[in-house]
Image 1 (cartoon, rainbow, N blue to C red):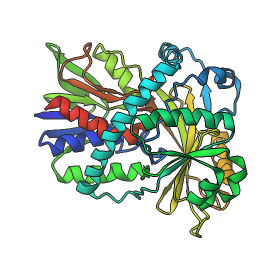
Image 2: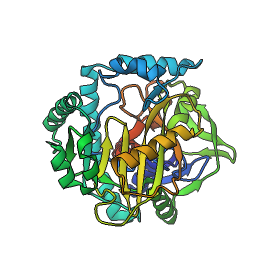
Image 3: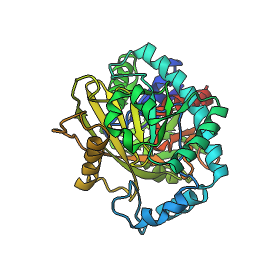
Image 4: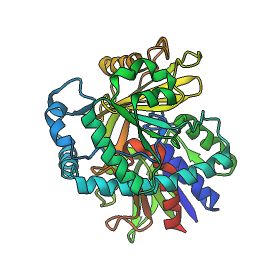
Length: 402
């Protein structure tokens, strides 16, 4: 069977790896280099056991700040965009306890599958990607936030996650680089099994290995449309001509909505804009973190990738604006100084922004849709968990094809 994967981000490349591994003839099309989109500078955390859907009941209290505050880590700027309004209303409808609980359950199941598949990839490809398995701490600034985290912990524990509530003193024992931040924490959730890696390096290594195994790559080649006959896609139309295949997988991130509409399918995928900086760290013991850390109040994550620290955060519904405001980068630098004052001189920040393809609930779209041609499968809408969920999603696509 010939399968054409549309998209060379981490989701598309994981899909290509899984399909190639199962003996299928695979081609990959993307308008840019592997990992050049939302995968390139993401938060680097592999959060398999601790997921907190953005669509949560707490959003309702935050709405005035989301709409009005220029400094809010979550930002919503209404525009004359019907998709944004439709997506936003669906998102607000999902901000209830029942939906959040269901989303958590579904994401944890997919994450567990993804962990196993990612470990298979590590054994198979052995990528040079600064992989670590040092665990994660999610920090909470006050008792009210910590109580909310306790409820999420109890829910996730019932679903098989191994984690515990820890005191500020225990946080410092787990990660000594947090010593100077002890007074700003009410406590944290510690998940010892969590991992981190450089997603861009994984993408580059997957392309290298897959090329050597016969996967065809068509890069700098944009998908413009499709030839459809008898409810089946016969070819993808690209700038380099038509590409025929027996089946197609759309893993094009935020572009999936536009191309899905050409096929008669509504994909509720909208860009959730995020930012990151990547800095060199002080090698002195205890200066920079080894454990991944999420500051829940700032909505900022810190992940050690080799001799660098990836600092990422923010979630903005502002359309496809790819600009990088200096204020957002300053916020990430200030967060680094506050939480890990000895970690880095912050001399070169390497600022980045990416458009995470998000669904209103946070559950990705994986597989066939009744409204689309039968041989077009979708693998998109992973939001901020694209790296975490990519290999489990790829496995589900492969299971649907064979």
